[in-house]
View 1 (tube, helix red, strand yellow):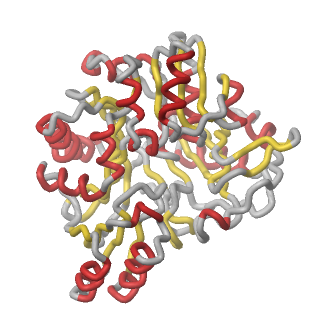
View 2 (cartoon, rainbow, N blue to C red):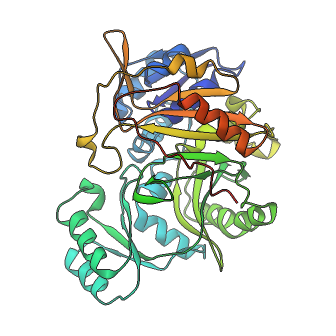
Length: 425
């Protein structure tokens, strides 16, 4: 099969690595890709949100399947554009992708399906949002309703802080168009965890558990990011809890999608809070998480191409996934300015050393995120630069290997969390 992979981050690097392991994959095109992905396929300089260009690339190369990594092309209708040309793709349609692209739509679906979630309201008017905040006395969460690359959620300790956040999002437009509508929710308490499932429109297959670290600072301090690290499996996610999430969250969502005649074939990502009252849904994402994908794909032993084909062909009930029973840990190395500043303050073009030495270590994979080549030198080219991943017989063993590999890599301004996996229990 000739496969086209769309995206350029560490998640897509992990997908490229896994897709290329399949005997079904005879050729891999990647748009646009990054330097780390070049060893697995041909990188083509087309932006992942250039829907018409990607569709034409698939046509010109007689692509058999398109795998879409990031959320933007899904939200822009790439699957629909490809379907109009009879090209098979792994990912939800434009309507299905609104579960992630529009938090107001997602909240409405959750309420309709009686899916446990935080109480909240949506606002298009800043005046109405401010009035609502002023009427509250407790902590709350303010979210940009659109896509903000994992950064559009702000946890506010009191209404005073929430008032500032509402103004920053709706008046100063710190998240751009993503913040033209906001959602204000109650603040839930408990550990946060991720559960992903393959979906073929009728059937869901729950993946192994994973837990990520969203805050930029250690001990979960500082602003939210796209994710600073992850580990799998997550000890908190017991078989009983997984069964509960499947019956109370995933199955009701499938039923709601069917009632709305939404054709959803791909991955669903449920961000959950394990509250004293049971698991509640923070958000749905319509693709693999980053960095959750890195640890899950490190552990997946089954043929990823075959699983994706099963989703497209609605035969997921015939699939049994095999998993490496070892633990996986991912530590993200980020650029100076990432997380604490706006994206335009992230320092780029900084030389990176030691990646090859780190990648040569046993049970270690280095997935490129924000990297580029400049005059033959690997340099930083984004906020989250590299994902350092390792497998180990225990969580502690995997952590030790990941951090040992990390110590071989260096670039000016490099920042990372030293506590990835510490909150597993």
